[in-house]
View 1: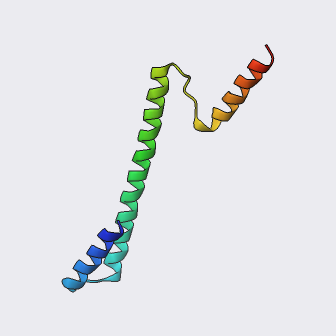
View 2: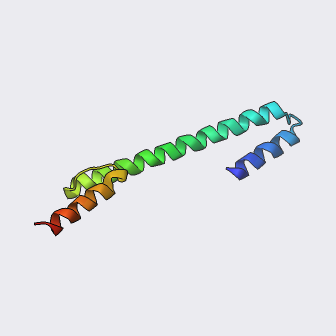
Length: 80
């Protein structure tokens, strides 16, 4: 992404169209694309995790509630 930005700046200097307003929108466009890629990766990760849990027969749970589920499992084993 940094290399892409540098090549954009070099191209703008070469064509003598270097403008702060244009470069501002270039940065916004690149940040938006980066956000979309990170969001897609997070969604894909959750989807793969949920699919793997369903295939192995485990209950699907949010990652934050994983500790609570684990601790209740330990409590059930400690007090039969």
